[in-house]
Length: 437
Image (cartoon, rainbow, N blue to C red; front, top):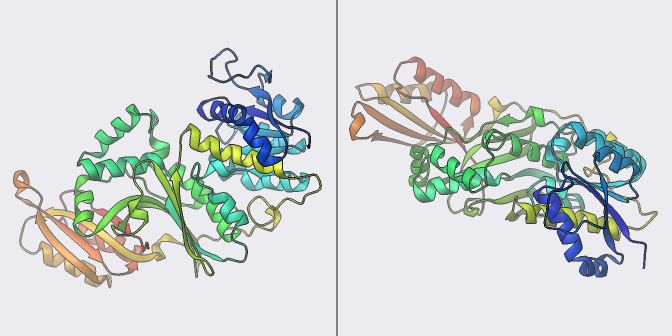
């Protein structure tokens, strides 16, 4: 049997402790699957005295993650610290430069420095594995890197943040407000004390940028993603979507267009009968559309200690199965130095259907004025519904428009025109309608 694979873990929070526990409890099974033992040889965390519910007595302790990466007698460095700078970046870079394989769950680090780190890994001939960085326990990275040879990806999209999906699911199922649902998500541990990173789309954007690089062979460009969160979604939107046969989901979407690569994160209406609309709670899902395979949908646990630990352990096991002299594939599907510069498609040219909700003064001529603004911008309407905003606001009406395919620029210009006309009593709501099978 080959020598044991020695693993060093930096970061012993929920995920790090889960990884150590799985490696200990599943040691015999992993040895049988990988043909060699996998042992936790070294660890690093802020508090050496904290009880993490796992036996780490056989591991050497390091106070400094960078020193663990540089000095420890290990073959694989597992980074579970988090953050795109500081010890996370420094330790991963140190491990790669020392010729050690790296496993990370850090989407923020990869979104910002992934290409640079990939160049180091490929130069040193070591693996940089990151399955847990996108969609938790769903093997989407392995699928895109290894199982789709010859396929040209045309679009990749999905539900990539469990917190947002949980909130939208409960808003629809229970008729409660966004704020009330967010507070409950925080109480249950699904949302952070400061939920901004999740609910405003940043987490989804980081994950999407990694998928975009894998899909289209471009350099990672997280800062170029068009982004909207879900904090402005109301019960009025949820109910209107249901009436029209749609469900609202926060999607990350990347697709190839004639003008470049379009990357966007925003609330989206998807047909209730579509598969993606059936993904509820904290579950994640990723759909990949290709020229040969057609559409592939992967769904499963997107967060949590066990789901993320499963992906990390899977990455470690892949390294354990590799043998000296084996030529590793490139980190992002293409050699890092051959990744193409990212060419951004402009959102104003994005074409599709749109849901528009307008709360307007209940007076003669408003309905006609709205229709004229749409016509002036060459927007064809699939449906237009007028309803009372409620008995307590009889002076207001809600107008709901669903457009045929049009452009973002046309919709924005039309809505701006209605706003300038002085007909609105509240902010307009615009939600894109996404084609989904």
